[in-house]
Length: 329
Image (tube, rainbow, N blue to C red):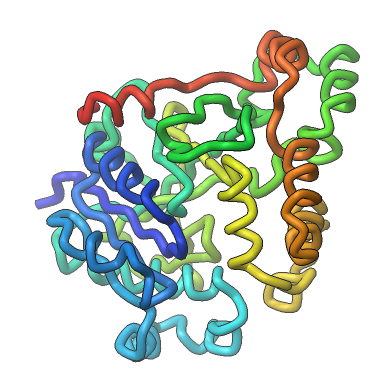
């Protein structure tokens, strides 16, 4: 019998000690299990995390690749496995669906290791139990993007509480004052979010035929399915919170192409920041990269920040820090 238990699938690399906070937070709010795929099989965190009783830790090795080949959507991904991390993420999510079903779980949420599921009005466990009577095969959660206020940040889950508000969730009217403030803020102009703004999704594991559709959604590739959007639950995205996180991200990614899967133009999809950051870090000049970070990522202007808060462009969420500090939801 279904009990609404939910799990998380994540593909990660170089997550470091914030991974402990990622696990602790999601366990505290009621996720039953985390399926963590380590893209680097030599990741130093792997042995420690593998010992966690509520984590299934899987290295990217020959055994994993064999398991990918048995997946129904493997053929569509095979050509890009070694070139696109999102291809590996999608395959890992498909495998995690099988593992979670075998573990008797009901929902699987696909997020990254720099993201938290945020349910301010109820625990995650209560939320997923409440979905048992709703006709949805997949749930979409809109995302907020973290807005760091400093260069030096350690565990961003415990230190960062400022977020850019998705446009559709800002109740304030679009006024000339709002537009001029955005235009005068280089961290927000010309693209408000530096990364995606389409949300992340969870899939009902009993829904037949559902598969990952990229890294943001689940779908039935050959039939109809039911999708709903959550109204009071969200994903908090913490990209590049702290200069070291920014530097490490783009050193790890290296000189990636301007198009995803040789098809989708990155700049046209999410703006040019991702490509500009790639090129800055590729110079190897940390001071130039730090200057870029201060101008385009972190905000240190208190007066400007106060104006953004008044306009509803940004907001603060302190609950994740409190949950981590208390060790309970």
